[in-house]
Length: 380
Ligand SMILES: Cc1cc2nc3c(=O)[nH]c(=O)nc-3n(C[C@H](O)[C@H](O)[C@H](O)COP(=O)(O)O)c2cc1C
Image (cartoon, rainbow, N blue to C red; front, side, top):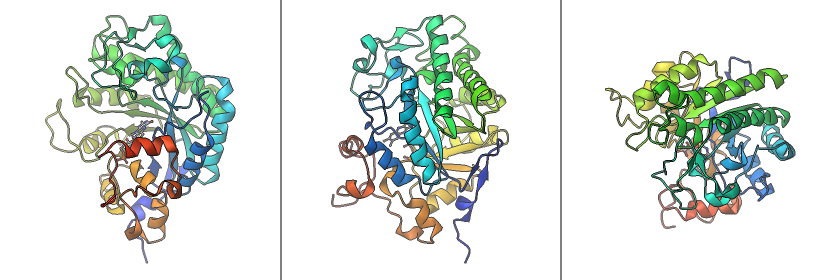
């Protein structure tokens, strides 16, 4: 009998010939559980092993590329060669279960808690404090980066790509979303520079595009086998001024020219509609897919819990679907669909299931202490 969810289970081959066994991607999720020295912990590795049998590709939590970019307590790093054995352990654990392993890399910029960066020196495009709080509750006033420091951070992204290759990852995802440094350069809220890194929209794109160029250059020089380079972005910002949908579409046009392997949207709801900037009532995903989908594969994401949710999403024409919270709630999500047991998928978290679900303590505590973040079973 034909599986009604077959469109989710079909293989997918990127232009660089890397193939995925299905269309499901594990979304990058920070877990706060890495060791103090920036290495990956055993509890983290076990969490990934539990979730890497089903999805075609697993994107890791973000790793910081520079010491000044550590954005979360318990985050792991890709900022020095000493991290390579730790990164290798992570890559091998994911790949052994059958998924492709992609390392997400970032610099937290003004969203870094001061106590996590050397000398409490929080940096960004401009000296503008965030409207949102860092994970530890501050709203630090950052120091504006010098031109030389900007070049050095671009270099750090390239170095992280080299380390990802040496550690055996199948690819790297440049985290240009969720309000971190790359987005801070594109945003008119956080970037008020008047040099070549700010001002016009083209100049606000200069840093994101320079990071892409450097990562691609390093990959060309170092990778002996096909290696994926993806880019994640948030389509809009709530702040005024802030990134608008029309500005994002212009950025995507430029990113599409860079021959990236994929673009990955960051959204909490796949079906969310533009806040401002375009006169279009369709979902952001559909607008994005129409704009660049024929040039570069797009990964969609956001509140996909059931197999039907995912089927509906992939029917928009987006080739790959990322799932985050749901893979914490049910690590066997893909296998249940493969085995014709989609109706057995759990879409709500059981508060006593931490051990069974293999979730590290700090992540579990974060989930339990933030009501409304995850759907939770009734009577819990
Ligand atoms: C616990 C948690 C940690 C996250 N950490 C990251 C991260 O490190 N990098 C990133 O790009 N997005 C991160 N996200 C966003 C997810 O990748 C995803 O876009 C979001 O959760 C919506 O998808 P979902 O509804 O399938 O969970 C995180 C989300 C959660 C729930």
